[in-house]
Length: 293
Ligand code: GUN
Image: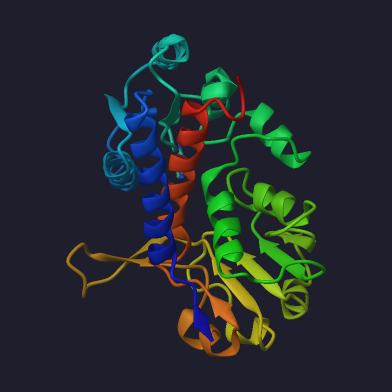
């Protein structure tokens, strides 16, 4: 069994980005500028946003954090988004999800100019990704593919089972795994809460991408010997033995599944660190106007 070290790969990718930013600076070019909007005080969101801002600093990007209280109206948030769309210094921006209930996430996502949508959530980017056109690919799916690529894990002709059908992970990662090329060319099955023969499908999988958000869901008796396991779960499970009072827990029963696998991502330290790298990569592409002029 080989552990997929997402932290090490993420550090490597960040170094590559930092190198490119240094070259842009040396030539007198403009460094990429990312803005992150956060609404309210969700603990998870605040942590993620702090990491995103810190990562921008690490690679030499300019970053702007814009925080609003949870009672901001939808109209006001949409007005602020429009300002960022028009801000010529800004290459890309994201609105951290989830949003308070009174704000439509879909309206917010569609209000972002797709040319600045470095989260890759806008329907234009989702659609372009699914038909194989250059696009901003959403961070978690892109991070997963980068891990498969850097570990040189064979995907062509393999049966890939994706558990979970979210717009952010399940659907886009399924679409990327079936696209032509490497990583890709896989035969993909998407399972979800209504799937009847989930265990049987998982047992036939060469690659399982677990992205359902149910701690320790994937058990050893659902995994074939030698399978590749990608764990996207990041649930905060209460734990009296940690300083925070919770433990980040994946969707895979790691202890029992790991001995059966050829490759497996741990939680934390697997897919998680890669997602910020993908956001940075998209921001670099936005800065260089490589996807959209
Ligand atoms: N919430 C959880 N993951 C993400 C992400 O990748 N982007 C945004 N904007 N919000 C999130």
